[in-house]
Amino acid sequence: MRIDVVSIFPEYLAALDLSLIGKARRDGLLDVNVHDLRDHAHDRHRTVDDTPYGGGAGMVMKAGPWSEVLTGIRESAEPRSGGKRPVLIVPSPAGAVFNQRMAYDLAEEDHLVFACGRYEGIDERVVEWSREHFDVRPVSLGDYVLNGGEVAVLAMVEAVGRLIPGVVGNPESLVEESHSDGLLEYPVYTKPSEWNERPIPEVLLSGNHAKIARWRRDEQFRRTAERRPDLIFALEPESLDKGDRAV
Ligand code: ADE
Image (cartoon, rainbow, N blue to C red):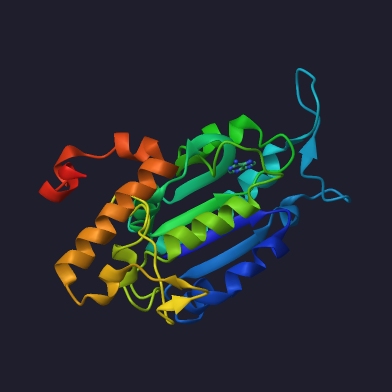
């Protein structure tokens, strides 16, 4: 998968060299390119923002540098895109909220481009113009406001990147994790079996795999009902088994 990130703080994205995502880059599974938007501002001060039409606080990112950098990315990708449009993700508190479903969908794409806005955002005409060549998706990390899109991009690239085959060493670990089945993950324990006068739940020492699986699933329900009741209401009835219905 190819990933391009455009930012006025390219150093923020240095974290993409670390850990599993960094290894995936070195292994050739992820081709990550970070672009400095200011390289596409051609005045002496490398200006990327200006005051908003209609007045109001803050500054707005100018269309010119964005159109130049996005055109360059698109043209450099075209020869191998096979006609499929790259996905342009615009992190914004005004976007659709990111979730695991979106991460799975994005992991199927060949080319993701992230446009990190700062200040009050990017001139809306850039978003409209980009729809000609990109599949544009404004995406929010959650219902709070960050200073810019960079932190959101780090989170999204990690969530998507780890779903690409070969990035996570043991693919089994992707199956039984929070949100993969619409529920939060069950609690986990490791040695010693008693610590600070706290024993682990006995069933985990029973060797009875069916019983352990049932206990884990019940714990998922208990946790989810307590912490995220909204997820319980969103469950598809077909995803429930007989044992679940009894909980
Ligand atoms: N930029 C500013 N706030 C954001 C948020 N909540 N999600 C994504 N990008 C943002």
